[in-house]
Length: 413
Image 1 (cartoon, rainbow, N blue to C red):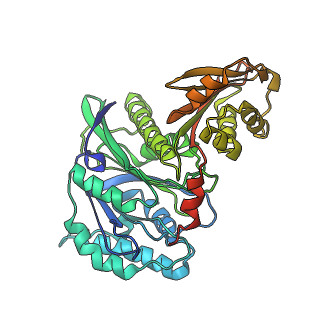
Image 2: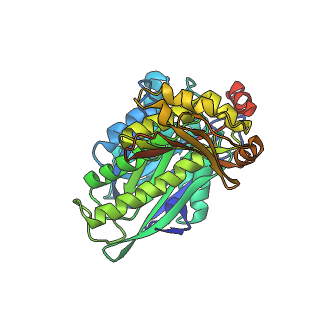
Image 3: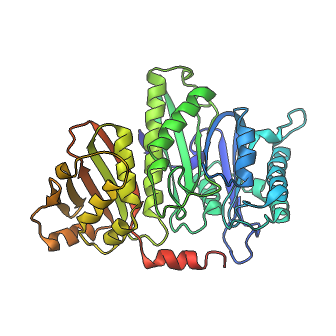
């Protein structure tokens, strides 16, 4: 897989753009984004597991059921969640307005080919009038360039401090296939799914069924393995659109073509997931927790999530405190059987690696060395359960800082 430029506009036949339409009066940033394919796309999506779901999630679930999309319209500044029938009407109106603009004489685009996404404050009516007034300018802003990608990405960001997106190219059957993507998410992040919006484009020729299978595999090992604060949102949405412009041999069954695409998509999504964890609200460190030696991958994932989700572990990470007892404690309440007397724990970073726990007890180590290792921007907690199993998994999180409380204490203002 080769990294390229262009983001969601890197795959052939896609355009993107973003404008400010004034959804949140106190913000001066772009707040309305659009991604469009020049032709209908096979599409797949994964959505929040929260029982309280935003209007955009309800509408996009309905639209993606048919398996074909032409566009995604998304806003920031307002989640359009817990807004009742009025919110549903506003989400449907967003899709209809987009479809009308995409339609040409003799070639009407149904509203069902437009997905909708929203992010922002919950429980506040969406100012649909601002979106309606901005729709013409939004279409005028569309570009098939990195600039179009950047504008759309800015328009979906809320408390994010970094733009998170990219593009890559792989080969399938001798044809160059491109994948582009963007994500937003900084707080209210916890599996399954992490609070986020994620839009992925590809020019791969792949059936809807195989695309859905590849996306679910990728999400399981990427966006479902990040945690910032233990809260799962009402709006989580990950969509992938494939328009077939790469002209690769069609991927319709298992085989080398599917494995090449699925592996690339998984790796691509993992990179975006890491970027989200690194940009956790108030975070100063990316924390990767890896568990090995478990009976299976599922057990290793549960154990790693328990450690990465622990507020005490996250606080110790922020303080560069080698408090490995908190790691064992979090393993112990994960609900997975293991022998505490066989566990070893190491802390690692670009500054080195320190063994802090061996066979369930303290290892001899220098507190100064451990503090130096844990003071880096990216740190790892490496756990070997000692069970001799082949199960392994990594989960990404971040430290817990005073800034997290500050950010969320005045989020609505």
